[in-house]
Length: 118
Image 1 (cartoon, one colour):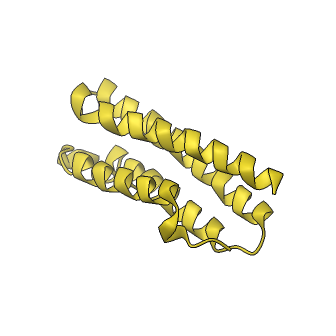
Image 2: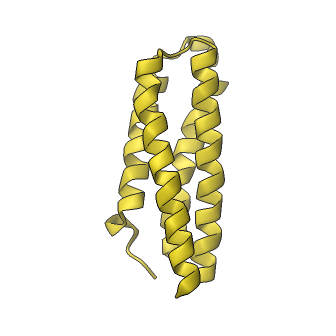
């Protein structure tokens, strides 16, 4: 069992979620139940799955939740690109978040790999 609050990957995922909430607050009202909601849910899901997995009893269970976090990060990345393509956000506003998502994806892969070796 890991203390998720101490995991750098969880901390970075929380930062991404905060950035996503601030960014999506600028979306038009008609996106309230559309892309805005989807983006927020996928961002929250990354940190949530890392935390839930860290609280599990085995590394195998943890890896399973990290795998779900990986899927959510791909989902978020896609949704952010779509928001840019739909001109809901400016490139500079979304660029930093996309970079951070890629970093978390790399960290996630490395963590999964290290848990397999234990």
